[in-house]
Image (cartoon, rainbow, N blue to C red):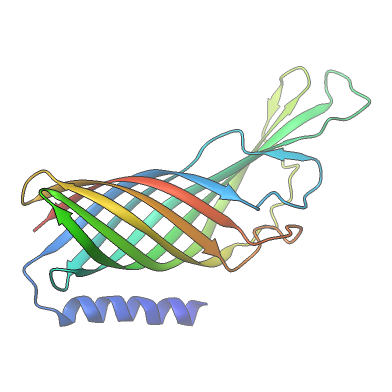
Length: 214
């Protein structure tokens, strides 16, 4: 995977350097993620009680009027709550644990402008997602509400994953320099998140972005 990531980075930088275009841009984005299948096949009752989210920065080069290459770095947070539902309980009995995983993503994309209407541009895009764990934190709660930071959930989730991603983006050009966008996106990972899972991790995202063109 490290070799594949290195080759991908080199490809992106060589491509950016090989095109002498007038238009480059920087992106800033934030969004909501809905992760699916990462809790399948696991013990106890596991739910997504808190919204997963992402924060990203990126850059793009416009190859021509239709195509652009884009690279993105992201912080991605995933969390879930485990409820134990023990039959015999006291006030000190463990009630639930919350696991929050922090990830770092590198995502190379190729975007295609399908059409433009006035100040609106509509893009379709596809790319790859390389996701690496930065670690996790856990919170545990007893029946009487006492909180601790004890680890009760195994952290043997996949620490590095690769996924195929694609989506579309509706961009509104405020002026020649700035644009705002909304981008629904879907990622199909090639790995289980936990070894107990019965299907690969999938992620649906909706992202809001700001683009600065220069």
